[in-house]
Image 1 (spheres, rainbow, N blue to C red):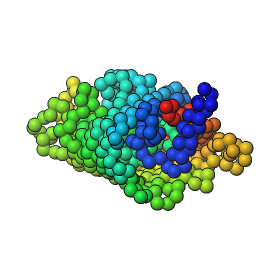
Image 2: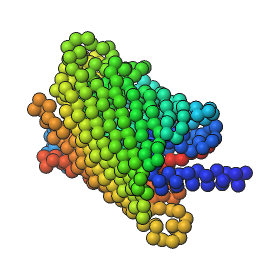
Image 3: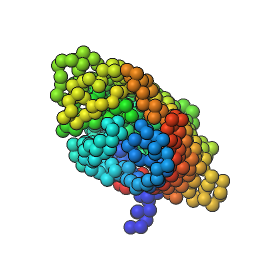
Length: 434
């Protein structure tokens, strides 16, 4: 029995090692990556984190920064993500995959302090249930170069959405810039065509549009796919594209983008006024890369977004209706951006005993800059949204599937505001059990 278990663990370890060495293709494929002829597979990933933030958590820390310069620090424990993967191979090229995620303990309803609404307490419905289905699809494979996937799928726009699992970034939490301006993990219902030919992987998706009622000044389109309803509204539609190249050993370079309309993609649909007159076009372009070689891991990305008719969003029907479950007060920016780069070196590669034992200890640094409100709308400014952030720390891998993370980070804001240092510690795993 022990020999069988050891063989299974060795097989999973080898598979994960190959994934790490060759740069994982995209998170959207991870559910089925390790099936390899098995009928059923089950796995997942999870994160436990502790943070101590050495800055104020008061709602007016940006509107009255001078009054909160010396406020006490605050700490928190969190379970950012706990995910279960399941996949099944029906045969003849037909497969099924699903990813069930519990976020921050798994409840769908929570009380939040809305900074953009004067610190008002609100009960927010993140999703109509206690858990989220990030993936739920049926797929037909015609060849390595052609697959059709139907259902709820990951939208691989940007580095983090394409590689959102915890072994694919050094920081304790997902990279902050993309996680601020874009849905993360971005998942919607639609149809995907994808494949790999020679050194290229490509994917095209047709999706339900984003909902402009959910756009905000501090998170731009981040909550656009969310719906408090029992269904995903599809009055408008969007398309997403991604191409990755693997020509250079150890290097993956990807470009991705999204385009769709957002005003009027809501319920109830208003046939008059702003909702009918404007479209709210959303366009996002991104480039990213991952390099793994010579004991280094380097990752980087740049994302830029455009929102048409941004100055009209405040006046759409559901945002004017005080009883609707949508945002009401703040303007939304026409533009948003996020850039970031991180690099880590495995110091255990220089210690023969640890290298043979396949343990790794990365010392890393990260820098990013982002702004979800990069363009003032109707002369309204939110200068605290412009952030530069640095982080330094370590990632220790006792085995391939587990990482222990620790970092010191600091947000640098405009001189009017107080900078925001913090210490974060986390433990995460990712693996398949069957």
